Length: 114
Picture 1 (tube, rainbow, N blue to C red):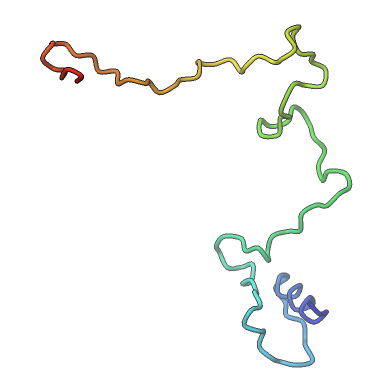
Picture 2 (tube, rainbow, N blue to C red):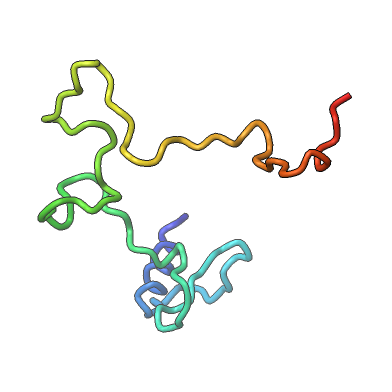
């Protein structure tokens, strides 16, 4: 990308088109997002730049949301004496049955195995 394309993209993103020394249409492969006034899903070119490095933009207050919880034991917790962490509490793991659960109620319902 040369500086003219960068200036054009920045101007279009801000809603104003800077004067250019030539008035040629953009190349066919150029992706120019629509002005921000149009409704619709955000385009990749209109997304704000991600914050790279440095301190976080806003300080973390209170406990983190569930999606940001670290995986594994907390730094202050020690595993139990067995040496491994127990599984999460909840229902036991269900395995599909090896045989169907249909139990015949009459002897004539099943065919003999031959």
